[in-house]
Amino acid sequence: MIVASGRSDRHVGAVADRVIRALKDGGFGRASVEGLETCDWVLIDAGDVVVHLFRPEVRAFYNLEKMWSDEAPAERLNG
Image (cartoon, rainbow, N blue to C red; front, side, top):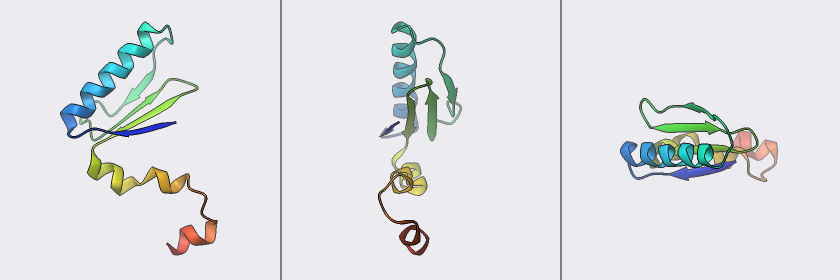
């Protein structure tokens, strides 16, 4: 899983387009893509690799990194 941010919706869209093109050029077929309409959060599912591209505010709101942290479950509920 790759989590990255762009500076704006336009930047997120440009990075997503480049990643999708690189996947196709690399022979990894058609990746499943969601979120290109608004480019707040673009999800690119290429099978073994999933790419999340966010605008900074959206990344902070969803905080995926916390979901994958080493904190104990009780700490997650209370934090």
